[in-house]
Image (cartoon, rainbow, N blue to C red; front, side):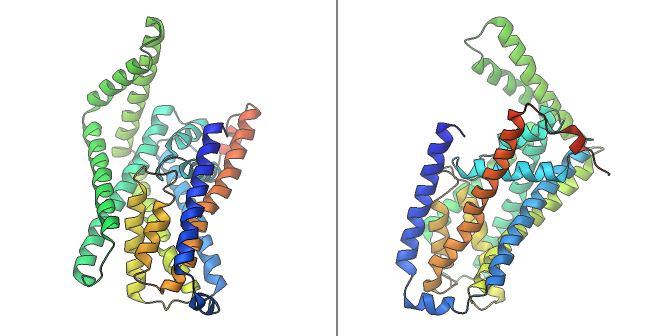
Length: 354
């Protein structure tokens, strides 16, 4: 880990702990300790297990998408790169900063750079579609069934703005996917910008490399949209499975804290998590820390006792942030160790039965 990453990690941890401390101070009272006596630890352990399952769904998505393109990558390799990705995302602005890690690790498994980029890009497209559809459904349900609930205005504005930007990026992807020449032209301009101080030979070499990435990228997209449509199916399937499983975790935590499980609690917890997820995509702080804790506290104070809000946010962030940091750090160290030995992602480990 370089100095910049360490600095971001300390800043991220500092902001998260500070906001958590404030939320706990504001919400904890004598009722908190009384309520915790009815806590069910098994449900809290189940919540952690469900999050691990989500990471496995994500790993399976990458594996199956690569497989649809004709490349065999083990589930373990995909799981390790997903965990490492979570560590990088936790210390970079917004919660979606680990894409370069995934591209690099997929390419280390023998998938060409352009096609690895296509897999990672399509992952975000699938996520965007699932979240965009989910946001529309949430707004509809809130307006029809929960119109009496007064939601935090600032959080809602941020959620709508972030959803609009994310939907715009998804739309931009489809535009470039439909017009490959625009993508190739963009890569030429990027390579020219990067190599403007280099020799003509170096500029030409870099441009050929970037254009090659673009060609491989569009080739992978054509495969996914043609003979390799199974990659599209598995991409959507595991994306939906991932997000649904993640959004149910808050409900499980609430049950573990002794909150009565109801249909309204389940539905609103899913809606609020979706809105918080969209808000966290705004690149304000490393890993979305501070923003996440505050948003969670404001939303869930509406549906669970105030005395439990601080404890809920603490447990939720442990699972989705601190647990990711721990597991992600271990995964990153495995990658660093492999690189230090000068090995690729062991080809013999990447062979498996279909």
